[in-house]
Image 1 (cartoon, rainbow, N blue to C red):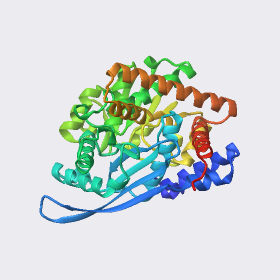
Image 2: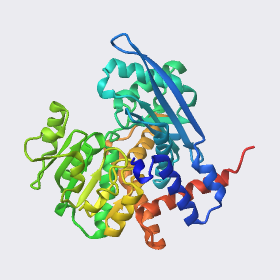
Image 3: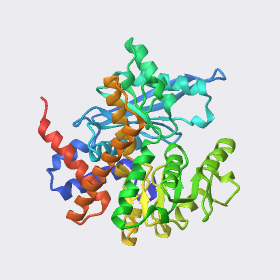
Image 4: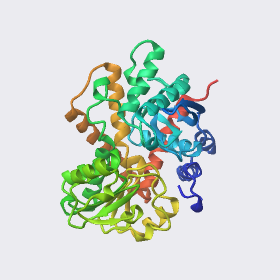
Length: 418
């Protein structure tokens, strides 16, 4: 996130919390209790590379708040991940789980590495070493990791196996987002994007717009971006632009999402797709479209490009994609921003479903999972929207008000120990 705008992730998260607590009129002690994570573990991870060299990576696992249940949050592998970022993401996870009213607190993990430069064996060794290092604070009743940037079902399988090997028996519910063959939930892989779709559909209903008339641009073409493009297209929208870290492609007549995905698999970038205009990645934010889905890293919508964004609706598939300054610009322009803690909460909602299924050893059909997700997302959206209308605030502010209220109520009811 752009430090030039004074929006380093953790500082931004704390400022959002401070403003929300002031708006709610809560005691200042709630800010002091909620600004700092209850636990932050930093670990050194020496790994033998395929070359025989031993490299030491840095990793973190942060648990922000446990008032509403076990800590829940993803694990990301990225060369620029920092403790500051992981702390912010863990706080945002607390608000996300509270907005959709699932019984979790917030957590996040990260390892500073470049997985694109590592072999599968190196990634497995790194994952197992990381799991062993943070093992004392993991568990199905304490902290449950999930996939995030550059991690996937296979990484979750390695975490589950390492944890289970240390316990001496299989513990499927220690992670979510794992393969179905190991106790994963049907519908989990696309859940974040499907939740985003449901939030967009609710927004279009409020605005009186048909999805069949909408054009969409998606920035970031990993799991969330790909599924967002595919699901929005299947729902009737026209996907006109997509981008990944190496470039973007734009075609106002529409893109074939599956063909774009094949291009990315074959060339490592969507920008090689032949049927459209090639653009720099950041230019895709500014293309002419109705719905923009930022599904890349944080801070990419900022004061430098916000005024040039033409989309009427922004559905934040990524965490923290919009800086504070950009939020103000978009608000003045009348852009309807569905904030990250609501728009991309489908992933943690279905992670909750997976956790429940694993604890019960009883699994649901994909239709059941999707129907329950639609119900959860719809209820959360309308609670947030009703609060925004009642308090005359924007959707992001309302989402934070709802989330912080629920967490503060849990803290108050539990009291202090000792």
